Image 1 (cartoon, rainbow, N blue to C red):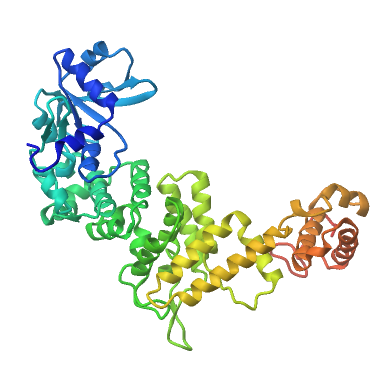
Image 2 (cartoon, rainbow, N blue to C red):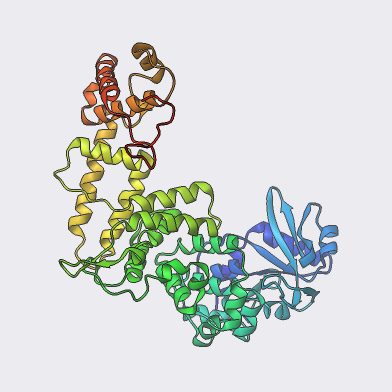
Length: 482
């Protein structure tokens, strides 16, 4: 069955420990096959990550054969065999019946035939096995042919495969992007069927989250998101993004918000979380779009603020960690950078202070991707971001004071010198001092800061008290003091 490949090359790439597991099974009258994604990766001459072994040994037999076994999923026939500190998953050949939750089989039936086991798998190129002892490649569904033509095809009846596990439709989109595959028409048609989408709708947010991050590792994540939008998956998972599809064109880029968004994601250089921020950076545009009475062009005032709020809801829904959610929301909120060479050094420091130093590099990468995703010559905008980055780096290297922590005068000294008690006024003076040193970094030394603090304190004391909420001339004042 392995005529189409150099079986010796495949066997040489399988780790010794994996071959050793199959040898030990054979010594006890059982068999082991290397299966799944690692075989697919070997056939594509890509580095394999996880090594899985299918066996006709029952889980209790595996526990007797190997000295160190962890029952990671024993109810479904899966255990982990520890070789040194490395776990290898061994799964008993099985058939599955009923998927009432759209994920797990209601019943698992153990088998002895590797072909029957492969028949339950999702796509043909994932339904290939290697017997490293016999030197055989088992490919009953022509997965090698589909790999050669870069075709993603469901095993057997596509509707049956997608009804078994709702995540498979999203995995299909992911493989199309990460492996550079086209989807067989009958397979893609089944992905958008009501049964497949109803099963997908029951998939946990955590599993969708994990697939999204894997998709972002592709050279062009847009391939997956196009499929998700076309099939109806995106409308289930993230309807906010669908609002940008087929929006009227605007003069800022040559296509709708959705097309621009996909172009930006593909152009964005960075980790998965930064690319998620690129995916969401304009999510607020459809809800803020208005036509200008003066020019007739579309405007999107405050789309970054609305987008940040929507991104927060989306990240919570998809179970992003608090840190990742905060990073995405802040990048969406501050992605609009209206830099001009006329900015003073103080203006650059003020921008860095507003977006926070740890977000500068991400925001500039996102801005470059945004420029490249506008469908026109981006060289001027890209050059402007490079200039802003150089200026920001130089000012940060010079030790710019960007927060109260960077001041040469702390709150305790301020309270002591000005005779202030703990309270809001101390924070107000410190915040004003940060603005002073943003404008003039040389002012960040104790004597000058103290002089500035006295001036600020005098101005604050002379200012009229703010009106209370809902105030007016006759509104009562709380507390009686300024």
